Amino acid sequence: MLSTDVRFEGFTQSDWSRFLSLFRPRSPSGTERDPDRPQGGIIAVVSEGRLRKLVHTQAGRLRLEDVAPSWPLSVEELSRRHHASWGMTLEVGALENVMERFGARLRRGDGLTAQLVLLVSLVREEMLAGRINIWPARLSGLPVPTVGMVDTTLDAVCPRGHAIALGLFDGGDVWTSVALRRGRAGSFDWILGPDEIRRDMGLLAGDWRRDYRHLARAFDQRVGPLAMGVYAEATTFRELEVDPTPGAWARAVAIRDVILSPVPIALAVPLGIDAGRAAFSAVRGIAERAQGLGLVSPVLAIVRETLGQVATVVGLEQDAEGRFGFDPLEILRRLLSREK
Image 1 (spheres, one colour):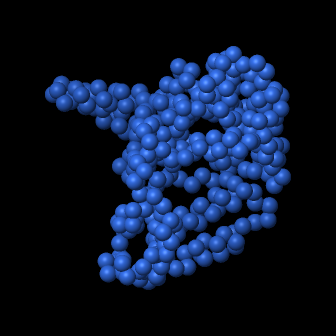
Image 2: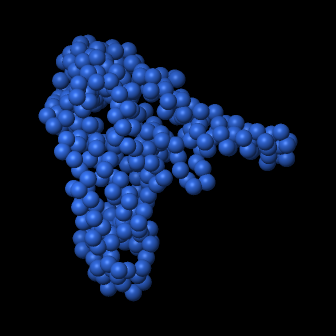
Image 3: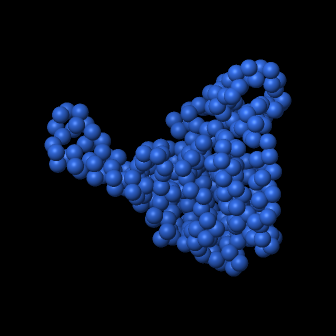
């Protein structure tokens, strides 16, 4: 995904901090997170069912005597007991198995994408075998993409020799931005921040819905032709990242709270799924309200059942096993959204 000689330019300390803040977990309601919420993680090392080591990422090593009498505990219960936001249990030798198999299956010339996919697959195999347990399982049920799937997706969204860009505004000025150029070899070889771009934008009108064109033109001239550009106000983008409302992204694009320019055809797929989820949610809500009033006819019942089956098949609704369709917007929300 990244070339061995990738260029990383154009970020001041403030620009980079702002960019990283986009991926900080937060509450979907937009309220400040509870300062007394569980924080840090708890890691338990186990051998043949016996607790061997207990470490908290903030408090350090913990006394086994405090937990041993009530062992075994689930990872969730262990985390709650120690006021941790996440927990992990590791069977002795599990990490060694992962690294040994990783080294044995790695091939000369494997890129970063192939290495990451292989590593994630090996860790998941250990999890399925019960030798690694993690709570909460935020990405439970999501498939591990193959290298071919990743490459095909990149080819559809950002062809080789093109770039993708994100530009966020605040108070009429560029808050932060980033552009990634994909080289002819298929890897991203240039990551450019806003500090190198602001001087090329010229005079701004103070209205981001017009000024985004100047940012897009500057990126196009500096890093090459854009295959996709995403522009919005920083607050709007941050809210959408964790918004669980069906159709939130599609609605934002429709009312120009988010501007996509240019738009690759492949991007219509996740946005189409998002809009479809909104339509399905509305129809289902009407049907359920009608059922509550005792007005559901046999025909409406059949329609509701059919909608449920269709939604499960195409990934618009969670199925009985809790699996979702492969939706990058949903993955982002599940990674960043926190209740507290």
